[in-house]
Length: 278
Length: 171
Image 1 (cartoon, each protein chain N blue to C red):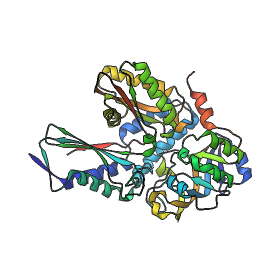
Image 2 (image 1 turned 90 degrees about the horizontal axis):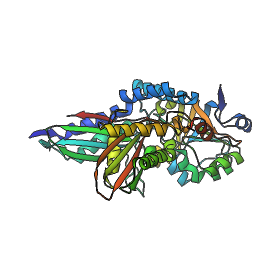
Image 3 (image 1 turned 90 degrees about the vertical axis):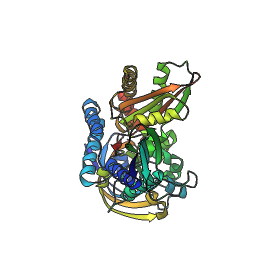
Image 4 (image 1 turned 135 degrees about the horizontal axis):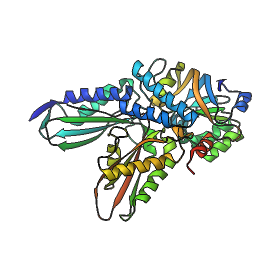
């Protein structure tokens, strides 16, 4: 049994949260640079240039890329041969968030109806899975509010076809895309269950931007959806253009014979996912 | 061409702005978002510009960029009736807001969402003027210099979202 101190998890979460909020990852920068080449709208190109310039300022001056530094979604893959010592796992994660967010925006309220700010951006949403091995993979995604409001779930009939799913995703983009700071990354979860499809959509965002699903058929569907989404003309910030989405990521899972859940989770261009294995 | 405009915005300036114009805004902006709108806008809005945002901590401010404007739609018409000149945010708004902007001769600007470090650099001064207990949702009075934005809805009914998307939508 390998022992990992709770404090190590706190420190890792803290540094990942800071790193995510100050440094836009290479894959996102690459996707944006590609978008700049492809965009035909002058205004759209101007917006993408502003986004790239913003990332450079944020990195250089250690300023948050976006003022919406998000609610922290933590993905933990815990090796079954790991024992966490000297503390409680959830508390360790939240302590890391609390430390990191001292200089970031506190965007979490303690109660969805009373709406009093918790003042340290806790709690995080924690997805923990037990996996083989003696390591812990920690991924954090600070998730802004705009894309969340535009996200959606639909329980399709199991007989629905690919075309219906594409239409649904494109319709979601038409309604919610302009409010989600396009160019966006569209996470799609297909299959699983009522609760699992949104998790799949979310999890798909942890993949490097514009890297396709390893299944040939799903990769093809990602490409088809991206083409359809970029036909909408929504463009950067919804003001018109060719690049509405930088990428579509799809994750799938087996499901019940009666069900076909499809979830769509929008991610803004300020896509801030960071991970590390300890 | 980029137009330089000063706040508070006068009637002549509003008249000169058309959907699609790029502007650099200098002067006072009031920062207010959901919670402050629900509690009640606590300053005289006549001639003023509200920036829908909630910054990160910093001196004079941290990063600050626009939040989704349509969430403020249910509170906006009474403010336009009282003479609010402009709003800065992101995303399209309801038809009724677009009509009210035309009726009351105001303007809606869009700034680049997520470009908050860059926009924060344009803020020269910042003070909390109301609701400090709301933390990141407190109402601020800020002074900006050359804050970049685009006119999305003008006072003539022009709508850049509609025009822009129509131009690039695949036939």
